[in-house]
Length: 81
Length: 81
Image 1 (cartoon, rainbow over the protein chains, first blue to last red):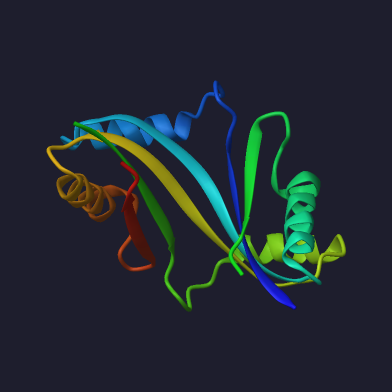
Image 2 (spheres, rainbow over the protein chains, first blue to last red; image 1 turned 120 degrees about the vertical axis):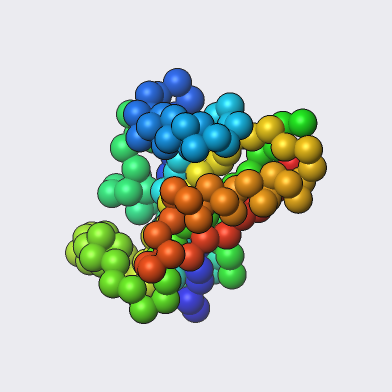
């Protein structure tokens, strides 16, 4: 069966995110009143798996083996169906 | 009041995404059976607004004025509360 999985990868709490900071400053300079901006990458993956839990397991492996850097990133996996 | 808004920016349908393609190939080379991989950027913004609809309006303006390129991107805005 084919499953769609949403993988969200973001920086761990406390990690500096200079890109997000630059974007926040740029928005503030445009007049927007924002106090915080966090960024994340999202991947929507269509994969073959026997079950939803198997699809989730595979997505976690994708993060651990390629997509995320465990030193700086945390990730969440959500099976969309 | 402070609102949290999730802004998701992705490429329009039909736009080439060489980075996503490279990641898909790399995952396939690792043995994962995935047929598709789409990528998106997510920004979680904390902003001052009088109401949820005002917060949403501001987030849409952020996309139109800075975050998204209307030629290649589409975006969605979701007020988280």
